[in-house]
Length: 128
Image 1 (cartoon, rainbow, N blue to C red):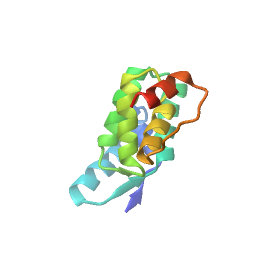
Image 2 (spheres, one colour):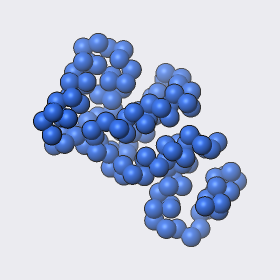
Image 3 (tube, rainbow, N blue to C red):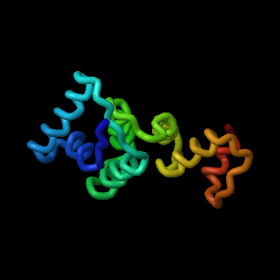
């Protein structure tokens, strides 16, 4: 099993440093061909999101599409299902990805009450 860090995903997705892009792409292809398990974390997923948003200025539509692509790679993220659901909600509503994640996480734990001062987030939580 191999852990994949943020910079590998960024080089693969951005294709901005040719030799690093090629190395990252080869890792993902080889894992598919060989059946090697690739693993990453929820923190890495959010790091990719934050770098794409803050450093590269990607808009919400591009971010959502890129995150979908990331989750479809042959990589097991911790809380993979929660991340997939978070991106689905992120595409549909006017919430941050972090709020969408917290919403899905809370639902996954079957919480009855969600304490926040964010009225939009609370409305969406109560509406489901």
